[in-house]
Image 1 (tube, rainbow, N blue to C red):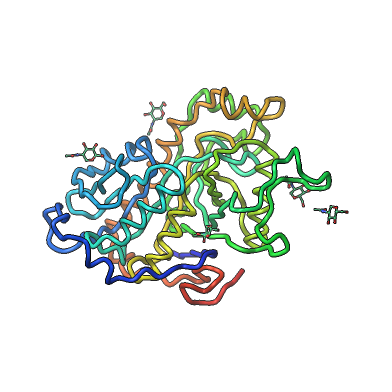
Image 2 (image 1 turned 180 degrees about the vertical axis):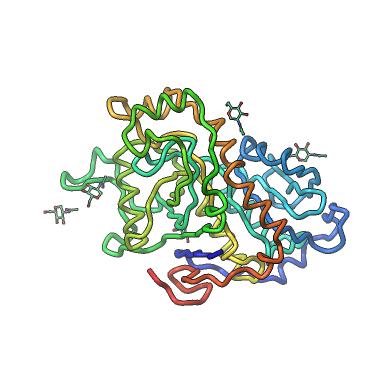
Length: 354
Ligand SMILES: *[C@@H]1O[C@H](CO)[C@@H](O)[C@H](O)[C@H]1NC(C)=O
Ligand SMILES: *[C@@H]1O[C@H](CO)[C@@H](O)[C@H](O)[C@H]1NC(C)=O
Ligand SMILES: *[C@@H]1O[C@H](CO)[C@@H](O)[C@H](O)[C@H]1NC(C)=O
Ligand SMILES: *[C@@H]1O[C@H](CO)[C@@H](O)[C@H](O)[C@H]1NC(C)=O
Ligand SMILES: *[C@H]1O[C@H](CO)[C@@H](O)[C@H](O)[C@H]1NC(C)=O
């Protein structure tokens, strides 16, 4: 097992612990003495993602956590409180507030908990395909950049997006690694559908291949964007911020916010940032196949991968969840990461290696 968790980015404002004491303890409705210390915490974003875990893992104990989304007000745990799940609500603001509320809740002790972010995403056909499952090392905030409408950009610009501060590249990637989960997921047969298989054929390799597990990185943005030019712009930006190491492949609306909340919780001594797995499965392509329009791909195309991407989250992620619970003695004390974990300001200590 080898953890390579690195992140970079933002100033981690250390929230002070004493503020927590203000929470009334009667919110503790889990019939459990002391804070709940799950071995695994699943982080999902909306109801369909939540749905794939609740039944198979028997997450029947609901714990109301103040500050979660009104749509998803509780964590759901199994009978031993070994595995719990929250659903943040979609987009960055919901992810940031929900994960912060969980991480700073006195109802939980998450210092040794392994977090698995498990959601669906758009996918870059240059790297992977619909139905595939990605495990990311870097999470980059794609549209936290300068933007001008491309119709008004200078004629020698390749994109209307570029880094804040223009001549100051390399400002904030966040990243994370889930090697242990990807190792457990290797060799698993993912699910597919006929419609997804047909849509996939319109692309070239690797997008036309049977879905598989891929190590590549995620980009976050509130905007649900589509198209090759934006995709290429964000591929370039990801490379820039990660000094060439990051490979943009999965686009979603939450990860960077979730991770930032976990950085701050780590900074406050409440979470271990080296125990995070970032998993995104591909429900749709982030750009059209040759010969189709961007609008067609985004709005009208029947891509057929929504269901299988949900199923494949469970197929690819559950071996890790089960292994952590079963072999807790191997996971409890964590594994010292061989590389830098932290942001570019050294908030979590250590020495940067990129
Ligand atoms: C627990 O929460 C889940 C997810 O929100 C919900 O489907 C379920 O009905 C709840 N169970 C109880 C006993 O309230
Ligand atoms: C675009 O052209 C301007 C004017 O020649 C130049 O100053 C600038 O560096 C160019 N920008 C890019 C991105 O090539
Ligand atoms: C991405 O970078 C490549 C290589 O520098 C460049 O040719 C291309 O125009 C860029 N694409 C966009 C959309 O910015
Ligand atoms: C695989 O997909 C098929 C068709 O969508 C579905 O009936 C089946 O239950 C899925 N299998 C798994 C393991 O999810
Ligand atoms: C995610 O992006 C934003 C910018 O990259 C940055 O503030 C944040 O630090 C990044 N990572 C994290 C974790 O936030």
